Length: 65
Image 1 (spheres, rainbow, N blue to C red):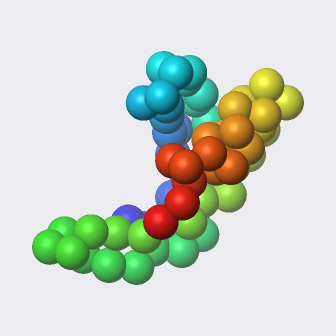
Image 2 (cartoon, one colour; image 1 turned 90 degrees about the vertical axis):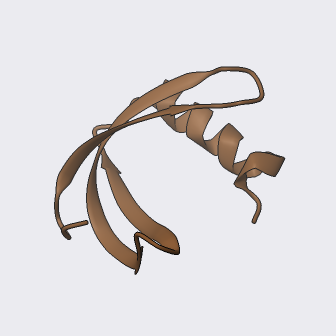
């Protein structure tokens, strides 16, 4: 992925089907199509509700590696 590319990302939790859509900018990308990618994004203009949903997803067992 191109650094500084602007994207819209839609996420849905497999646990409770909660959804969040965010605008963001790619700030880092490592990997390849064979092994997968690790992408870091800076979310821009995120609502408090979307931030709370993302925080909840990250703190659940879904956010662990």
